Length: 477
Image (cartoon, rainbow, N blue to C red; front, side):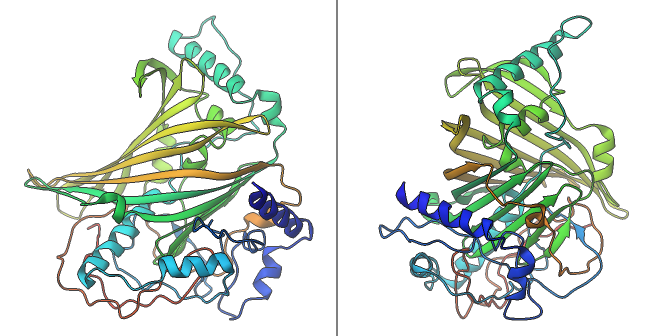
């Protein structure tokens, strides 16, 4: 506890001294690079753990040449298998531990290493920074409980949300929160791949899991920023209230089509105010047991206007549905499931459909400054592809487990400057968020092994050079 308080005290000192993204960019070692908006706030950690349980601290990302436009967010890895950008930073004692854990040469074969790298891109592309179905604003008041001339499904949902708000700390306390910070650890693994003729499961999934961590910042109204570093790759995304963007090492920076939407990770027990706002127009559709606990089920569907705004060209998002399971005993959200279906129409060919389903289980609720926060959980993601020909479907299953290490509210000195999108951006063809879903395996023996494998984590970024991939995922349009 002393180390966590020391870190956060140092963090507050940095913020109060007014470190801004522009100042951190001025210290960049190369004119072609600039710091991420959060780098000034997350740059130092005064003490490293000596017991081997280090915490990840986000660092500035490599950025690419300047341009005039952003391209939409792709919720999946780059099919072209672009090279990972390189970056050099000086690490702390924690960084030295990370170097020993994550920068060592893999003991597996080159083919297995390349397959693992492709799996990691798939994991980060789909699970790194997914968005909620709808735009919500925490400044909008929650609907008052109404029974007269209101369907029973709607009034029941309003009552359940009132109980959830009360159980989470109360509306008055939640309205007093102007900004929030959370830091946690994650483990991800691609656990299963299924075709019409066979099922391939990951052996020793716990040993194959990629470990990492994330930091999340939020500020009213509707601003957020997240950095997630796993297995030597870093994904970071943000919203300044008007624009949602994401940056990956293999894609660069790009924007999301459609309205501004919250980060789904924040709804996983970290932001009860946004969660209640998200389900404000939901309907209660019944009850179900979740891990032996009786729960009410609230259902929310994205409206046609939002789906149309998120679609483009051959990619059409047909539906996006969110289910929330609220405990009848505690009133808290214990399970969340969302599913969206995308239709890809190729020129002169049959349509291909992609269904992405994310099931998240929230656990270990604890009070932080009077607000109930879920301190652990797990998600199971299923990518199901079908259409074209009979018996041509594929299904990929991925899993993530996370724990929350630190949470704080109303951090002094946090300003709008910390949520500015990246200045240096790569110009690409505008595409929809659905166009980069994984499609097929190209084979598992044609890649050239990486000469050197160095992991790049948030606490210590190193060079990472790779020649070729043995397996890549792509979407044919």
